[in-house]
Image 1 (cartoon, rainbow, N blue to C red):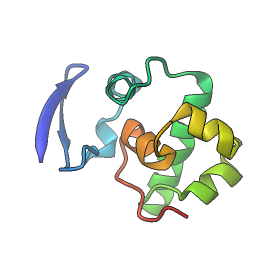
Image 2 (image 1 turned 120 degrees about the vertical axis):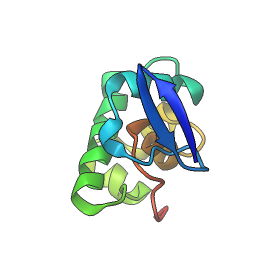
Image 3 (image 1 turned 180 degrees about the horizontal axis):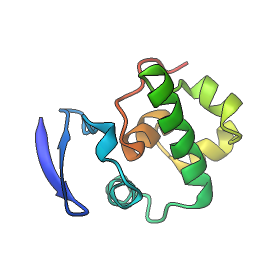
Image 4 (image 1 turned 30 degrees about the horizontal axis):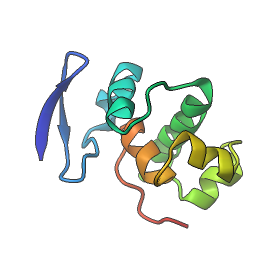
Length: 105
């Protein structure tokens, strides 16, 4: 595990780069994490996905699968891959400050 300072906070990450305490997340932290993943700007659509993922995590203890994400977030699959290229569920979870999703379907 590694501790990093982001947006004035000491935040702990696991070995795969996911935050270990989702309560430390802020939109400012999300902007930094997104930039590290090659997303230069977080739009309203990005935050629609991020907010959905955080709500699912808080309700169920894990992030949603890609299938649930595309069916219930209001963001179609094609757009999801445009917003979070190269593995949208994992990348969005990292930016959302939650743990890595357990399943991919």
